[in-house]
Length: 228
Image (cartoon, rainbow, N blue to C red):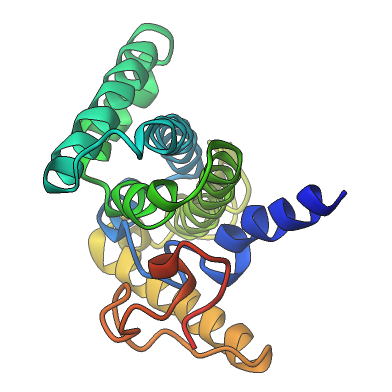
């Protein structure tokens, strides 16, 4: 029971406290680029979650054998292996998703969320907590992508998951599925996350990533704490 009580905060950490997109502001390139519809968001989220789980588990298993001087290249090699597996599976079974995600699917290799979790958490913790951390971060990433994609698709095309919602009686705002619309929705979501964080006694996002935390936040320590 005590072990489960310790694992639950790790799982929920990436969903709420340190959401990689809305709280840590990491991985924003694919977040802005592929969220023109909800389906793309789910596809990217599931792919990144698979890579997160695989890389975190592998890095945790090998953390005592990887020399410090080459740990970053080793992490990238491990991540690249899992990304290759994902890319081959998507190409084989979901060609439409592969076409929609384009270059951003192989670019998961250099996604800063995955590399950060390998360096800041998996490298300092055992396998099971590392897997739970990856699942939590993956869920948080996927939910952010889904919300962003659903909003942009609804406003920009009048559909959600390609199902007509408002397109028959409201003229879609095409700008919402263009880059300016992506930045606008992203700003609104971060603002909402800041308001929720402030009301719950946490600091709002004032910079990207961990630039100003001086190594004191949960991500840098490999613990489940917020930047405070």
